[in-house]
Image 1 (cartoon, rainbow, N blue to C red):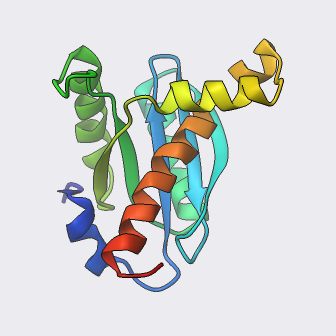
Image 2 (image 1 turned 180 degrees about the vertical axis):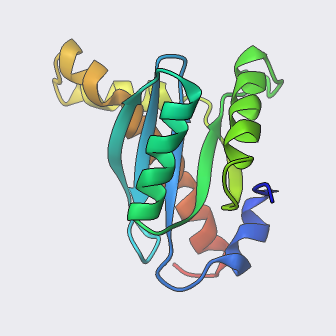
Length: 160
């Protein structure tokens, strides 16, 4: 059975108490990951996977999902600024199809436009060196993506 792709509204009723989400910023060279707390309030940068082969990348991602008892993935969808879909969106969807064939946890796509730019700007404001920015930007972008989804879930639940 392959994983489902859900809208954030459809994910909310499927989540059990204290189940975590993982955020994914899929790049061509790296995969940034972030993890929610069990109350799904805060996204924390987790890890950056250096991309090698799909099977190795998927195995590491599934290993982390099992370790942290993750219920679903929130994956950044790199839409063009006008909202259209380009080659990066196609490659993200292909990655999700391949990963989804290996597991049953659902996916939620989340608009990631400007996430890396926002994180980079924040790091520059904090005087982070170029090397430090390169080291953390992907997992911080994943946290930015995941935090947006967590905030939306909380809003859908009517919580402040």
